[in-house]
Length: 177
Image (cartoon, rainbow, N blue to C red):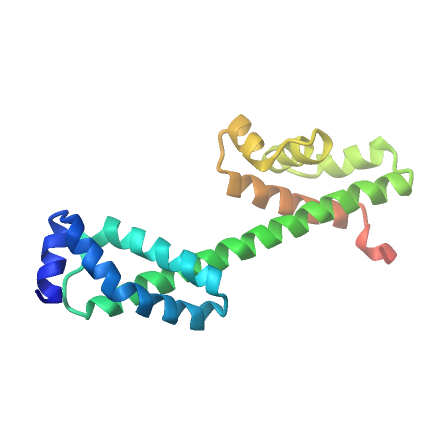
């Protein structure tokens, strides 16, 4: 049986056809992803993720390109998504450290609450609230998102931008910290 028939059967939900397609293309896909990621474990994970996405999206394959090309485009998009996610997580971890640093700097400089309160008052409520919940009460971004009924990514962004503005308002970065 040729690949086009396997694809046609897979689109109809035939598990055996999917298995044949995967067996045929999985090694090629892993080799491609090893070259992209330079990490065998990550390549294997992405190949499995790609195959899972293929099952979900097989009905969208139109046959205009080779099936292997279609798989590579899915794998490439999954890799790019993973890189973006890792970058966002890295940014939020850095922001978390900046928030702790801000708190330590204020405490070490014996900042009075009035100074902090004045700086916080310069922020809009939609930015001030997540900062207070995160850095004064220790709630996670997900908990704050649930409380405020806004996406966790929005909470993270507001905390990040608010802390940046607070640092500027309190002139923390200008003192060689």
